[in-house]
Amino acid sequence: MEHLGNSHIEGIQNEYRRINAQWLRTQYRMLIWLALFTAAMETVMFFVLDRIDAITTSSTVYLLKYLVAPSGCNLAICAAAVLLMRSRQSDKWKMYAVSLLTVVMAFLVYSFHSVFYPLFLVFVIPMLLTTAYGERKLTTVTGVTCVISKAASDLFLRWDPQETYVLSSRDALVNFGLSLVLLALFYVVCLQLLTVEQEKNEASINLERERQRYQEEAVTDSLTRVGNRQALRAAFQRMEELQDSQRYFLAMMDLDDFKQLNDTYGHSQGDRYLQAMGEVLRQVATDRIQPFRFGGDEFCVLFRDCGREEVYSVCRSIQERFRREEIHWLCKSVSVSIGAAEHLRGERPARLLDRADTALYQAKQEKGSVYIEKA
Image 1 (cartoon, one colour):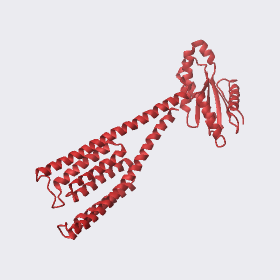
Image 2 (cartoon, one colour):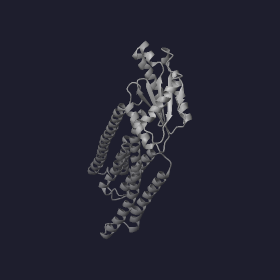
Image 3 (cartoon, helix red, strand yellow):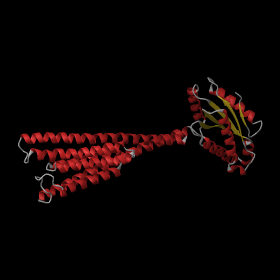
Image 4 (cartoon, one colour):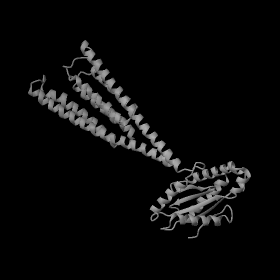
């Protein structure tokens, strides 16, 4: 039953991965829309500036420098993003690539239009988008790239001749430094948000682990670590719900000469044999083979969607595995007798238990044998 709890935790983690994959597609679409929005705004600005006679160069040069060139670069970025999303690379690799493509687009938008200095805030967009993934490394890589890109654009690129060079005056240098500090500060804020989100996620997973642990303890025999009577009742309830579509066998088993073992060596030694039996049953357990401790030295196994041959083979495997347990150095006469019966359609679990118990009685006529009730 422990693997069921682990699978539930894995289910939560898979859901996180599914949400990240969904956000990756959203970020990809936002990259495309950002390119379209930028082109639309550049077109609008051309008509506005032309209307107020604010264009200091010819219309052709302006269109080439501030519309065709930026749109062409953004189109190339979008094409790269499309190819990337259609590739067979892992989602994590795509997350990094799409985030860095968004930084490149921000770099181009700012470089082409850096005369509008507040536009440096466009670098906030890539950092903000990465926080949804909950990946500190991804946000760090994106944030550092944004700061470096902003500095490189100001120091080495002057696309607009009207732009004030950052080292030309004290005010320009102060503005340059302040903008980098603001971007760095925003990156720190993003990291703090990520820390809080990761703590919340870890808390939810830890709470789920605790819930699973308490739930498992409630349906697990404390000595042998297989299912208890409560777990068996729940399994019988599921059997009744699925009896029209699934085939079931119930195998009852107990340890031969167990009373003599307890009387001779004490109950603590008897407990060790029961623990060894529980270990064997856990080894053969699967989604279709569920072991339970019925009481005392008596155990049972519920087989779902198994044929007679498979049931017989598993029962023999249980006997052989138990025979090889090291505990037998103490008393080699202890063996396992097993009796099994097939569930009949419409039959109540109590009746199935009685028939399996009768089969066990038949098996104990020859200790260490397996008896399956004839169909």
